[in-house]
Length: 111
Image (tube, rainbow, N blue to C red; front, side, top):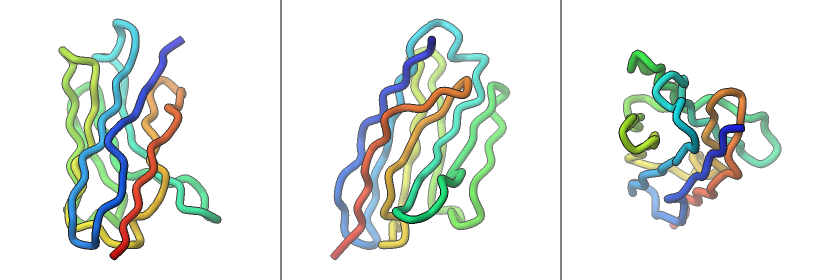
């Protein structure tokens, strides 16, 4: 079974940036659609960004050109670069592949 490990979360001030990474086990990474979701306390998990195996990307409406998803098939990793963060981006961010979730990484945006 595929295993996903996220990293890169932390605390940042409004307007700041963070880059999340997700490393995926196994040798099938290149065929997976990779996605980032987030869960704000009290709300349902929502899609942040998706990168298909064909390198098509899509983003949640709230992203508004602030985030960028990228994948490195040679390193089995997918990254999420987040810029111009606001307190509303505070959430636990999860990586997903092959219907498997990582453990999540906390992002806190606060002054």
